[in-house]
Image (cartoon, rainbow, N blue to C red; front, side, top):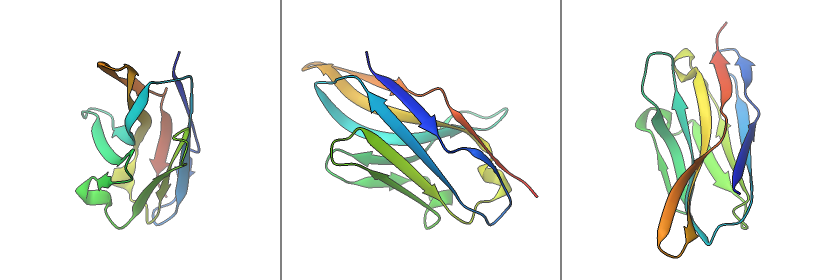
Length: 120
């Protein structure tokens, strides 16, 4: 069974930094991409950043230049370094893995979420 466990959220002042990490356990036939999503109160969940198995990255426009996603070569860990944080970055951040449990069937796996609050 695949499990994702996030860590690193918390309270930070505007302009500060936080680093999130996500540990992936369990086995998959292959992983397509790993990423981070967020959901603020009253809003839909949105993609923040993804990194594919090939290393290509994609970012939400509003976080470009401030956030950096990275992963380990074994695709068991994915990180999100968040700099120059703004109050509008406040949300619950979710780790995501899109992977194939079998050669023909892919699934999105989610962590439990970690709260990031940016406030003075």
